[in-house]
Image 1 (cartoon, helix red, strand yellow):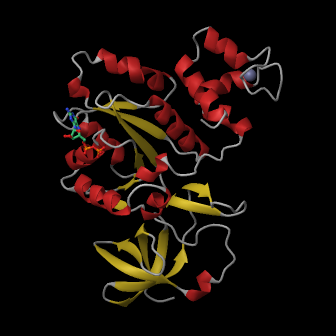
Image 2 (image 1 turned 180 degrees about the vertical axis):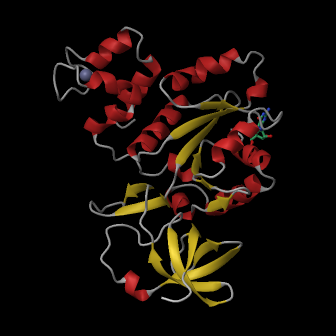
Length: 301
Ligand code: GDP
Ligand code: ZN
């Protein structure tokens, strides 16, 4: 086919996908023949790499969606066999919390980490507003456990600039899914990484509002120097939690070495005798807070 160009879908919107190709952003529909293919997944999602053909300046037609290497997805509500892709081809996730004001909701962080594990997405944590602590050691008391179990933690301040270079380095060249509660400084951090970046994402979150549809409005924001961030505020509320109970323990990464040592292969690590996970909690090898998160998630709290 002549003149096919490669591009990245910055925003998937039925019939009017925004595709970045080099320095330009074009609006693309999808070739009808693609739409007719039987699919159990979204035909085109934010983050997809596509081959498209220009039609007029500023617009084109997607001829082919290149295979996804990774994805952040959920089961389409009410349908067992269908999935909804929230972001295609993510490289990693960053979960942003503040060390104080507001106090970090570490149970929410645990849930987000499970979500990342369930999607095979490497994750790191950003602990912001470090300037508000007189003693930085306090931050380690909150977030140190995550470093111990293998998640990098960046301690940052959008106010003083601490950790911003490190955050930028983590983001450059990657497609990063970003989430965290409001008020922790996500907008300020993105503005510190790249002028106006946070402002742009903020307007979108306000426009799409809260709730189920928020994830549908996910957009990619290009980084100068390469890479993208996808702000996904809706991850917190979205029905992404249909993780099988027997898989949940596996997504608490520090439980993994113990799972094969439980007396019963069907162990839920709650009340069973001979549970290696519980023994590890009692021995201080697994954090009680993380174990508490596990128990809550197991009963759907
Ligand atoms: P968002 O809701 O996560 O996007 O958070 P914002 O970026 O809007 O920040 C919420 C509030 O926290 C604002 O008043 C910011 O000025 C403040 N803030 C953000 N980052 C920092 C920081 O690193 N240190 C301090 N002291 N305040 C911050
Ligand atoms: Zn067990």
